[in-house]
Image 1: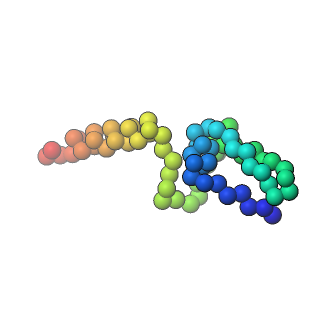
Image 2 (image 1 turned 45 degrees about the vertical axis):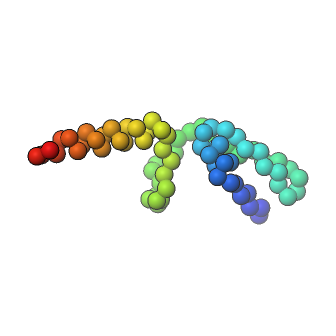
Image 3 (image 1 turned 60 degrees about the vertical axis):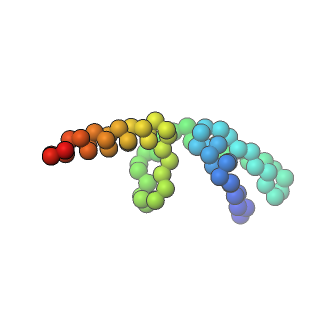
Length: 74
């Protein structure tokens, strides 16, 4: 079994919808891309690192700031 190792830039490219072409030891090439389908279920393991878009981060900040203003006594 061959191992395909990806660097941070390649992983970022995949996350942003690009494909990566890798040459295997036997000379064949493999195309790696993100799935066109969303996962049917949430991950079983709660990883400490997640993938968020800039829009997701802005929404998280907005909701967090709204929660702070809704606290009693603020």
